[in-house]
Length: 275
Image (cartoon, rainbow, N blue to C red; front, top):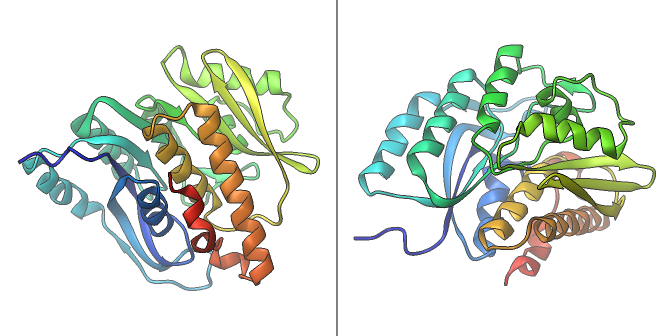
């Protein structure tokens, strides 16, 4: 029995019941794009950690037995998308998963979630950042924000790096590997710029700022981009589609009055990703 006749993306991330982030947005978005989304939950949260309180269960001990069942039925994936991790052990597991479940044409998208606005997240130690650098060696596409790119390239954070300097950091990060880099959410005046570095050159995908930043937009962006790439879209088109969708989601959420903590109301315009 062949379970690999239909395209699939494995997403290794946390599951958050409320707040529109991680697997709770990645599963419906990737599914809407005509791809089966297979989630590997690294932890379970009632609502995300920016709320004043939340239920949390670490699933690290479950990851190996969970995916051992997938080995038994010989699953392989057309795409693998990574997410936020809470320990060195989870990052090591992801490296193992990529080696076990990839096939020749698998697109591995690593979203190296470590920090934002010049600061490393409180849960991330230097050792975990080093582990994340190791994980990026398995990627075909990296989607860091500028803070994360600086960590990967061992550069001090600055918000005003020139595009030539950002390109140099991308080059230093991949170190000759066959890997593209999309630096997301760079603020330039009234625009949000996504910097696409591919095959030694770069282009810019710019969007007028739609509204205030919201929880989960990075997860929405990464899942749309991964879906487009598995559907054989060029990288620049994948980034443009993802940026347009996130912008429209933010606009709709502002119109409706969705609290920022509740993420973006992607459900209302999800149909636009079909086809």
